[in-house]
Length: 116
Length: 112
Image: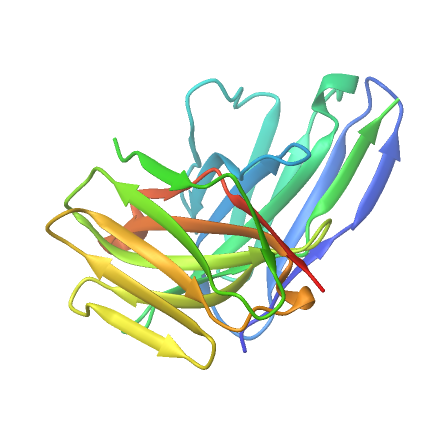
């Protein structure tokens, strides 16, 4: 089946630093990439939607200057958490939309971010 | 916008019993309803999905039903096994994925 590769799986950083998370669709072209954060025992909260070559659309309450999303190609999207703070610690996960007649979503493996 | 309600939030069953998780949605434009299983710290995995032109779909021990008129859809797991224990999420999606909304999840615990 289709695979979305997400890296890194875990990152620990100091407060104030920036962290980049990458998602690659390995065997399909992801026309749309969704980015979520998930707190323990909670649902997936959509942060933003990005279409290849376009600016991302952010959900209400998500700071676009803090969470920079780039979707430069149909197989790569990145999320950069700028000037990370302890409250940004969370599980971040992407999903790529495979279009076509049988369109489906495929999730990355997630990134556990811990900001000290 | 779309609103997806999922119940129950937790469900405990004995091995071999059936489990049913229900979701309702509000936007009649939603036409695709996937179900995901997420084990702790792992990615959600698609387990079954249904499109609005179908009322029921089955895959071995898992089935999903959709009632478009009432705007609800359900996941049915028969002959549950301990390895079915996980969090299950439903979602409602419209054409083109311009809206994609997840339910809050159901933690299923299957006891041996």
